[in-house]
Amino acid sequence: MTVARLRVIVVLAIPILAIGEFLVDLITPLGISDWVWYVIPLLFTLYVGGRSLPYVLAAVLSTLLLAGFFFSPPGIDPEWALISRLVGVLVLWVVALMIWHRKRAEEALLLSKQRLALHVEQTPLAVIQWDSDFKVQEWNPAAEKVFGYTREEAVGRHFSFFVSASVRPQVEAVGLTLMKRGGQPAVHQ
Image (cartoon, rainbow, N blue to C red):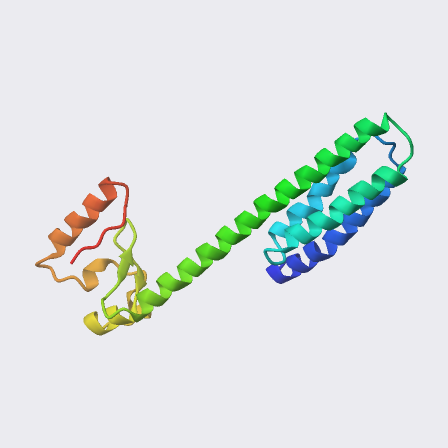
C-alpha cells in the first residue's frame, strides 16, 4: 500500500471514527468514560493535515463530547458525568497541543535537512561521507571536481580509490579515532 493511499484512508477514517464515537456516546449512559475513544481520531492527525488540524479536530471533538453529555441517556450523577467530560475535553486539547509541537518539530527538522543538503551541494569544498567500513556514502559536486569521479562512481566504493597510498594510513587513523569516540562528526583538512 502506498503512502498516498494510506493517507487517504486515514483522512476518511477521521470523520468516520468521530461520528461513530458520537453515535456510541448517544446510546451509552452518562458516567461511562467513553470520551477516551475521541482521542483516536485526534491521534490520526499525526499522519495527515497541517499543523492546525489537531486544534480544529480537538474543537470539533470537544463539541461532540459536550453535546453527548446533553443527549446521552441518564446514568451517574450529572455533576460527576460533566466533570468526566470536562477532563476528556482537557485531554483532547493537551493531545492536540502535543501533536502540534511534534508537527512543528518535524517541519523544523525537514527544513534543517533541506538547508544542509543545499549547503553540501553548493559548497566549493569537497564533502565526502563514509561509513564505518570506509565506504563512500555521500559525494558532493565539489568532490567530483576535486577527485574527478562522479557521485555514481564514488558511492559504495572503499575510500582507497581516491586517497593516495602515501596518506592512506593517516586517513585510516583519523577514521579509527572517530569510531573510537562514537562516530561523532568532525572536520578534517
